[in-house]
Image (tube, rainbow, N blue to C red; front, side):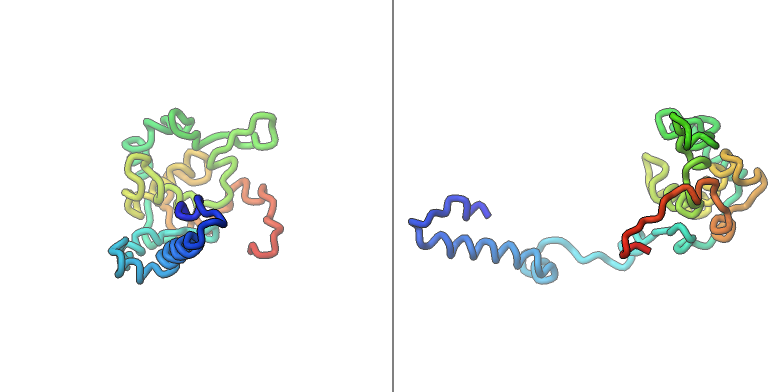
Length: 190
């Protein structure tokens, strides 16, 4: 594009140079496989690389992996890896508050936590597995993510202390604010 900025009607060759430059850039981005081969840019993602990032878990539980974790194991893991940011009882600190806030959403100062605001338990698992701990995202095993999910649910009174959390229990749990969201009215959104 920079070849085009000095173009004037008095120069007859610049439109050709300008067009050639634009076409070369467009071709580079339009055919990534050819660009990789021709220019040596980038590398194709391997199946293993794609699989490592293809870990979405949806609100209905689709994508939850096999395995389980206990609230008791979650408490130990929380104390070791989460307490310093989120507080001893999920009250927050340098990290977000995770627990409390029940009944506060319609108040002048709503407290948005997992228990008061979060609409679906499977997406809590997804968030924990994908982003925590902050210093080492995606380092938790599926069992550890289930255990931490269970402990955070326990802190909010949504799981028993002796509970085992798995895909089935998360999809069956109806979060307190599940019906507190307005559906998206756009016709292209399910």
